[in-house]
Image (cartoon, rainbow, N blue to C red; front, side):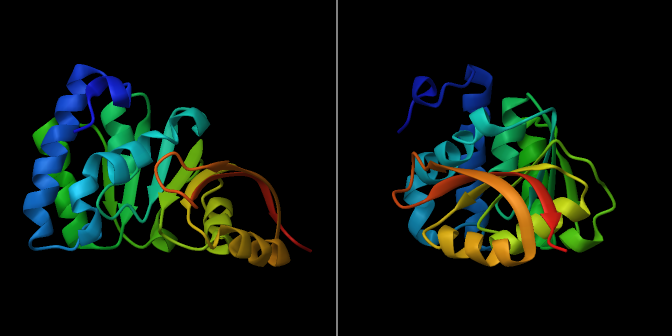
Length: 195
């Protein structure tokens, strides 16, 4: 198992993450929270995958869209540097995240709704993992009046960026994932719709 030192987190955060793992394994039997193939790789595939975006986060507020099993949003909330809002339309997944927050004493604002129905705006960083293609993510950033995004993307990222460039003007950088070969951390800013 990965150690606290490997994760570069406090002892308290590490204990929270271990509790998170136990709850994930328990709830996964009833709800599909993460891919079954990744359950045995919780620390690498989910925790480290979430923590690797920390150097790219800006500001004090984070919106995690399509939170699902809570990655990366709930993991970031456990680090306790930011105000994290997790949004997902799946009520059962949000009940799971509420239980994780309760059992780990983690402050995270959990909202069950479609992202299009969210009433909150102006987050410093918008993030997601596996929620939507880049064009939709850019549209969400604009709708939420948020100027900066950090997205965990897979092998189709370049195709998605080309699609997005047909509809939006934006600046971006890509960074290789430390946990998944062929995947990337995509940072985006200065988004506007083409005229």
